[in-house]
Image 1 (cartoon, helix red, strand yellow):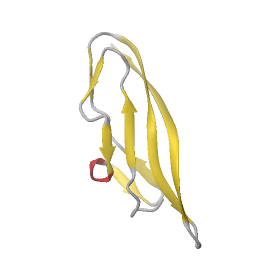
Image 2 (spheres, one colour):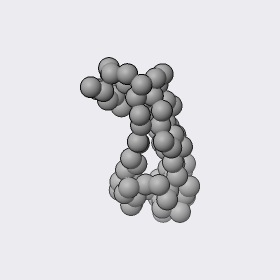
Image 3 (cartoon, helix red, strand yellow):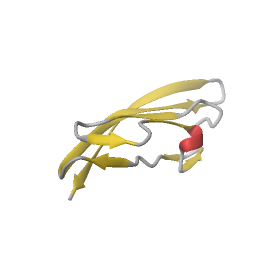
Image 4 (spheres, helix red, strand yellow):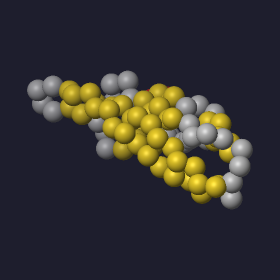
Amino acid sequence: MNLDFPTSLKVDVPEGVQVAKPHQKKPDAVTLDESKAEFAVTFTPAAQGEKAFTGKFKFAVCQDEACSPVTEDVEFKVAVK
């Protein structure tokens, strides 16, 4: 992962959930290095149940000749009790 690229995570919020910061950039990362990125998604649910989050993770992968921007779909579920 190219650390000079403007890496970001944008989370699409499911209904009944508030996210403190749905669009996070490099300074918001908990961990960010050449091999790993970790963002904390702090949220408040309005009700119990399984909440499905989706979003986009943008970063760049570099080789000797050039860097290629990449956008990956992300998905995670949280069981709210």
